[in-house]
Image (cartoon, rainbow, N blue to C red; front, top):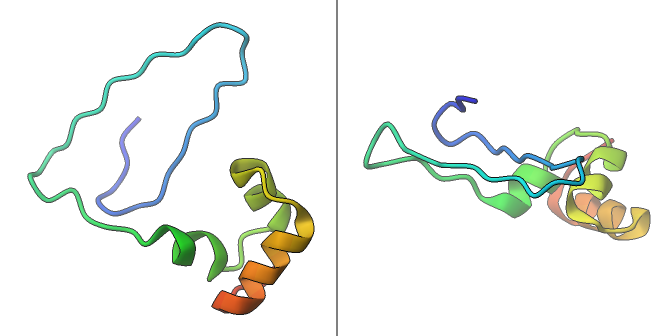
Amino acid sequence: MVFPQGLLHFQVNTGRAQAHFWVSFGSSNPGIQILSNALFSNNLPSELIEKTTFLDDDEVKRLKALLGGSG
């Protein structure tokens, strides 16, 4: 997989076998993404954030309200 510089991304191993991965950067400056803003200051569905962070619905909604997100 290739991700643009600074883009928030994640992968989930849904299988039963252990997953391995290798990471490389195409630049000495891979970019920066503030995780709290990327997750909670947007209109991503709360259900998606709950599944990727293992937070419950109330906590995701509280953080979205605090950081200006919706959805």
